[in-house]
Image (cartoon, rainbow, N blue to C red; front, side):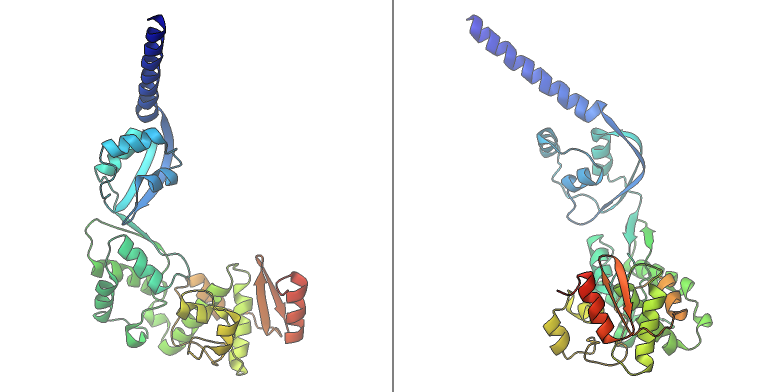
Length: 316
């Protein structure tokens, strides 16, 4: 009988310990946040939110959320966290849909395809909705076949809930026009060519110090009728890194290993700093470059180029 009572007391003690642990874990323990924004997209779960907020997601959390509707569809939007908050307060804020609007971030170099996918994930419009809006746009710069690649300016935009797709697209394109006022660039085709080149430079190198140098190499190649030979142009069309064989064989206007000149459109959305790097390109005797482990190497001849690739370990 005594042993049975001992077991009973141990069980009661463990249950009480678990309840206390649960109470402390959810209601007492707090984490300090300062202007932390969490973007909830279509399909985002509390597991991902815990990870973004650097919270431990354990068995108790899983059970609590399962019993309290944690599997319901979360409202898309941006949730801002400030001050000391417990898990309970965080969960309640998200479940009550206390959003601070919808935050759309377009990273530098993103393609329009990637922008469309991110907008769709944030429920700011489907690909079809976006393309329909673009067809109705009166835009001062070239956009052949309704292709607005290059004009989705890289920035973070915050929109109110239930914003219309048209307002989202207009906001992004107006940001581009603020950066590049049409009256400042009377030769629209020349501007478009520079934008194409800026998008290639953006895809090739990330260090600002390298961008004018790489732009200078590409401009020199264009001037002497030499192919650009940029992997990034074919990668844009394929949506992935091109193989060496594909660079040699793919007959497409976006394969700059086969076709001379610039591609028909930009291959991404560059920031104004990269565009300026093209306008202020550094022309030297170099005709070749490559990037390996974060460093960019320059060469005057193909032989020197191959030698540096071998010495750096980029070419085995």
